[in-house]
Image 1 (cartoon, rainbow, N blue to C red):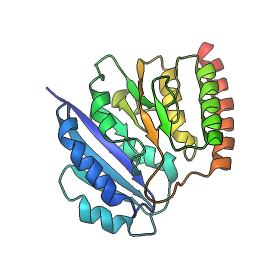
Image 2: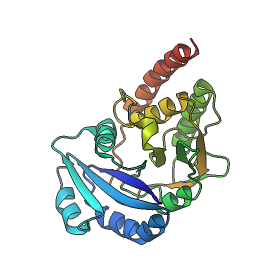
Image 3: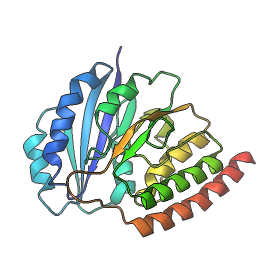
Length: 240
């Protein structure tokens, strides 16, 4: 019997890229369904452009569910909504700008065994790659991920990629306290602290082709530093 999978995707003012997202997903749905029964949730996170109209135009099939936040709740709000709505064996998170190709999901599912709790797309893996990022962004990102690797004391190379497939039972009760992009890292790190089985899947990360990035770089750096301190305290608590 097939397992079931929810793919949840956040969108905030993404009108320029919705048609591309639709094409990318439609091209991959059959490949993904070879492994799982599939449901796709599209979370309109308080967009003020025509995101909602375009979602309703393109994503009409029953496999899609469109959810709209009245206000922008950012990635932490998106994760909480996704976990609340999930009723499948697994849940995956994917960005709407396809900087992580939807093709990766079927490739990752090939390795998703009953023993694995999470498989994470990992561009910073020695066999992964990144295309189009500035040297400064590469330096900062690699440095932050190295620090998380030390704190967690596990062989992880990428903690911040949104594309991960989780066993839902493993993460359904995890409390997300960080805001913004750091919430992605928080969920992953707290999952690993539970002594779960994980795999990092080497992949390619590209820059977005449509719309503009929503990341506020300086604020995100400070949020990561704050969470790193919190994570150190959690490690001490788990040891005790």
